[in-house]
Length: 315
Image (cartoon, rainbow, N blue to C red):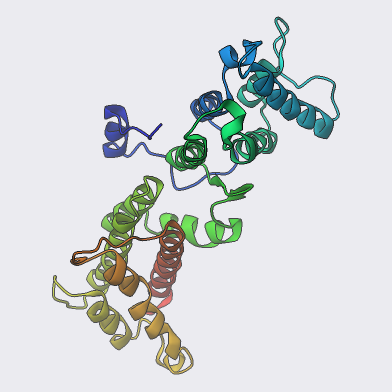
């Protein structure tokens, strides 16, 4: 089932109530419910489990294998949060995902469900569904989309993985947001957050466009603060030249750091110009998600560098 863009989602986005980038230590209840619903549709729901003819036996064996694996790994005879009445494997599995507080344990159960989708439910003979491979792929894609929609920094690709490394997130993304959290950099912060929002929605071209906007807005804000003139329509390359010409980077560093200009000139702007901006011709240009993530991190690191350099540079 595709992720639907509801009125409530649009209103939250307009009010700035979307999750702040990615988090790793929480699993919201609505996300857990959505993932359980996806498992129900793909692996089989309670009706399929109770069917003693048809495909019921296969569905029951699947869920029994899932809870046995979890029980063994946890060293328990029964999963926590299992209902005390009318117990069966599907209810035990669902209740565990919905109730376990430990995020990593919840993700372990979700990973097992995803692997069952990928390796069992994707086969035609599981429930005799002609479109089983396509439906399984769509289910995994929706789970990853739901993670992103809730701002949870995990995705499934054969196993549950972190979307971006903790080091990059701690050393680049969060400092960038913190440094931009002032009236002077308000526009840049809004554009940077918009880039992340677009990335969460899978709108990678828009994410690259907003990366460049945040990059340019930060440089313009620095020029305004320092009183360095520039054309309001100046491009990233022109703004970089102004910052370097005015010694934002000390002159004795410019020789040793000759690659810096190349990074600033060809990094964020080129990624956007070639893949996200301008006309794309008769053939639609695709921006892979991993490239958009890389450009987001590059933008964050560059913004941190520029703002910190401005703060450290003599007035």
